[in-house]
Image (cartoon, rainbow, N blue to C red; front, top):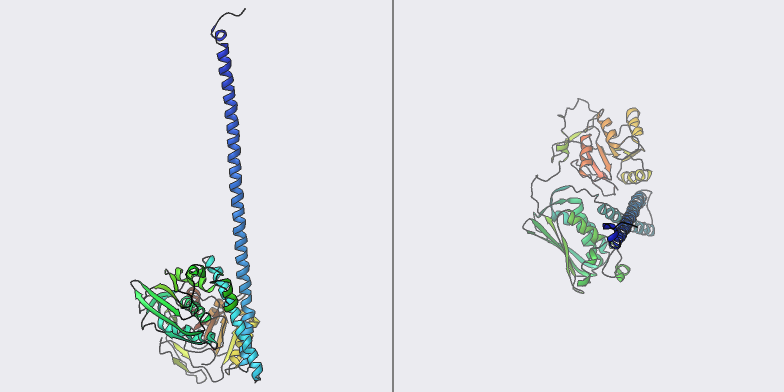
Length: 455
């Protein structure tokens, strides 16, 4: 028989306590197991969500890259179609019948519309990836508006619409001149599209540290509940708008993003049937050299000009604006065009031949240098920047080892309209640059006082 002690006297209580303890341990273990399982499930769900989001981002990125690459690849054949059709219209292959000229003009017009859409898609892609670099300087909005109006007038196409520039004199803003032109052109194009008759007015006013620019029209107007939608990508006031008036709905979205990239804002004031006014602000600028990009004279420090006593040398003059020496082009100048794209070569050659230029071509930098070394002596070189094996910058440097700028001018052809690329070209010895695609009325941008097509 067991002796009486604490355990025997409290066996029931101890058993109950042990049972509770074991139950607690079991419950605790069960809770911990379920907690770990829950945490693991949450982690797996988060990981799956992150992977799904990453997959969506990758798909979105691939879509944008495909869109951008496809658009970029469309530009060269498009520019070829436009350029060759224009040169045929101008008579590069002889005189044409009025019907043929009319048909070619339709090809040019349609090509330019498609080229504009391609440019919008490229800009849309760049803005989404924050891949647009602004070249900031002080810009007078009055003359800039005149340029945009001149470019936009063909869009009126028979409508009784008058575009008025009421921007006051010396209205300077601080921005990228090319992008400001793009913003204003998009707004004017939009106004023309939705205005059958009446006026489109551009006006500007300084307000503290910003300049407020307005583009007003007497068109169909916009419903107030659509004010926010029209600035979204691929959006218009309603579904019938694109069918009736055309357009993709990218122009205003791109303009909004470009304005905001400048540190400004954009909005609209409108009512149905009463026209619209688009208002955007840009930081105020100054009419001085503080924000101006260096020109050729500042980018290149030419040596004093020494002219040998040789009557066979071409005549040398001076650019009155910069003091740089310039070459007086002969009556029938020989131009060497260097570009790896044969379509571009044909377009440029056609335009040049219409202005009494004698054209020779090379499809890469190595061939161009060999031609200069052995048999060709051109009066001017048009040199593409981006070429395989040896870039236009390298070719220009090699040319300058033998020919000074006043003896053999070099104009760079570049699709990269960025200040750093321009300055690199000048530092390598280029006289000037042209932005591709080169159009028939294109003039050199920098200080070299020459029209490429003989103007």
